[in-house]
Image 1 (spheres, rainbow, N blue to C red):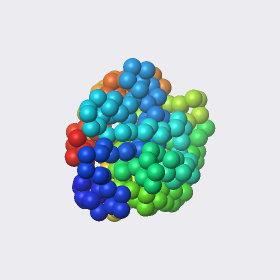
Image 2 (spheres, rainbow, N blue to C red):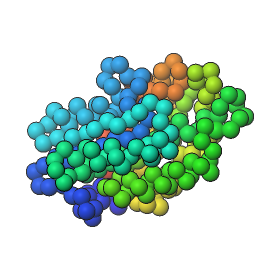
Image 3 (cartoon, helix red, strand yellow):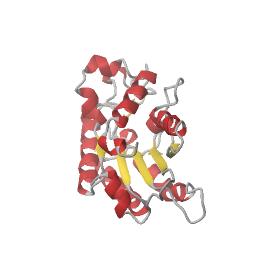
Length: 228
């Protein structure tokens, strides 16, 4: 289902001549940590739309370190505060979360931050809750640089776990007709050196070039192109 169809079939629809109110929920990759030049992909989108006469309004609700469960806990209340006008709520919700659920804690073969069974329950609940609020699209995680792990001397992010968590998320989105942008596969298809050049020294967060690449990938994504 396209974004335009989602907006048409949702109880919350765009009024003619009025820009969309959009919320972006997630972790540090939504917040833009690691990009002192532009503030990350969500900020680049916000500036792009702010620069046009009838541009959409974007609220960055990314919180560093958030897991899926933590976004789940704050989603509805923060969403309902962003309508701006009386009896209005945002028109579109962007989700980008999951990478902080995937790392192994303490050592490479220890348990994940969020067990896979718990993650599947939290993600399914998050997607269902978000869809009850308004149309949803999902921006997936980017691959880490495994050679730079552990992050903060205790978080072992790795591609195998990232792939497993993002594949469930992608499948859960597809079963709900939620558009999903698979940045993990897209970035990996461009090669390890390309990815490494777009990550900070911590091997986890994109740098300014990385966020610029995410922004460009999002802008070229069909669901987002329909909003332009």
